[in-house]
Length: 259
Ligand SMILES: NC(=O)c1ccc[n+]([C@@H]2O[C@H](COP(=O)([O-])OP(=O)(O)OC[C@H]3O[C@@H](n4cnc5c(N)ncnc54)[C@H](OP(=O)(O)O)[C@@H]3O)[C@@H](O)[C@H]2O)c1
Image (cartoon, rainbow, N blue to C red):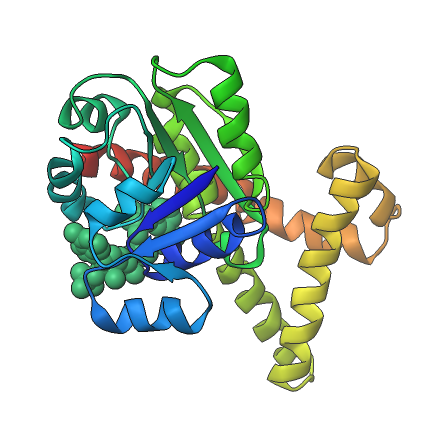
């Protein structure tokens, strides 16, 4: 399969890099500087979006949501039966499909920034014009992006809040831990490294050894010890309620922006 990526910005470039291990990748961007960057990274760069359509089996649309309509209208006549996958936030399968003539050969993706290191959490939903075998091929194509979650479209706003915005919430927590380390007497650089290792290591532990966060919390917190003292403070301040409320507000905002 040959992939075409329209828009070589932050996410398009990360997507193109993740796709290159699984398929031949062509890239197109209206910005000449971005095209130069793609060439310097070894990608085949198309001279027009029409050339890209001709050369690709699956087209990935990685432009800003406001530019999606223009790109889809431009390729509508030439896209034929090719599969078109969009990563644009808030742009529905129905809209993508209607702009392409209603064949249903469309895919909606919601990756997160962790795609940059091949560790993205990516939501995927398919249009009704794709068969099971084709869906598997698309998933296989995306397998170096990170973890794929096939979710119904009505959960995309929630996924956007949890996984799309989630890295910003985790960065915020890491920053707070690092500052806490400074307060305890470490330099900021050391405290930040400790915080990153602690958060990354805990996530790896959950992934590799299984179990719930609650079960592991009990293993860390010994009776009457130090950890439970810290946990009691988090509970008193409503830490979990704050996180749940934060994701809810984010999800509602995603819904509002979709209109
Ligand atoms: N950032 C995230 O965490 C995240 C997560 C999930 C999904 N997304 C989605 O990812 C998409 C891309 O976001 P981004 O942050 O990567 O944007 P970006 O850095 O602005 O990249 C988009 C690129 O597409 C180019 N472009 C615009 N119109 C074009 C056209 N007609 N043909 C070809 N190229 C065109 C832009 O050029 P100009 O700059 O000259 O316009 C720019 O180089 C968005 O739809 C966003 O919703 C982002």
